[in-house]
Amino acid sequence: MSAKANSLKEEGNRYFQDGEYRTAEMLYGKAIQQDSQNPKLFTNRAMTRLRLQSWEPCIDDCLRSIELDKSTNMKGYYYLAQAQLALHHPNEAFHSAMTAYHECLKTNSSSTRNVSQLVLQAKKERWEAKERERIRRRSALLQELEEELQRKQRLELRRVGTMCEGREETSDAREERLEVESTWRKKIEELRSVFAIADEGLKEREVPDYLIDNISFSIMHDPVVTKNGRSYERSTILEHLRRSPTDPLTRDPLTIADLRPNLALKEACAEFLDRNGWAVDY
Image: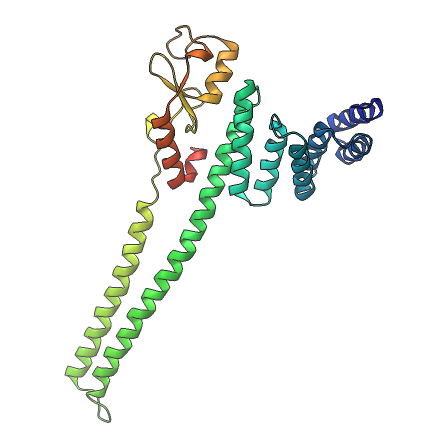
């Protein structure tokens, strides 16, 4: 980085720390003019634009930074995921957040926990988007089926009505008409009940204990297992091991090298979250 670009970056950092984000954005922009091939300058400005809620310019900066440095650009993907979530693009945000997460793991970054939370947030918003679509389709299907039942009801009532056309309705005809109305009303109520029961079946509101991390007490998404067979969320156990090289429950000696991916549990967590995105906030 040129001396001029570095000076502008440092000045931008000071304004950023003081909360003067517009000025910081301007200074980072001037630094980029001095050195347009430095990916860190673009991530600095992207971070500022996140604070300013300038989502699309932030995405532009992140993509340019990633283009310049694809291999180790955790911050570029991390900021990109946040901006994509803000614009309600949860699928893209999830992939960006996962890329940032894997970069954190490669470097044993202290940001792993924050990035892990962003992954879960993207998963939750993906589920919410699917749930909104399911409810929309469910409502359309229920309406279509109700209209079909009502159409059949009208046909049967018309048949009953033709029996006394031009004459006063007899007691037998009236009784049959009321019976037809009652029968079809019950069918419509039963249809609505079936849909309501199906909705309840899709909403488990308890997270099984084996999916819960024993450090953060949140649902796991990337569990690892220790040599003693205990499973933890990767980001939380890594954070713990930075402070103390012991198992947080048994206090037995434990190092990062002792951790192994728990693939079966990871699959179970992913399947549960796909069906129950609310569990992110459990």
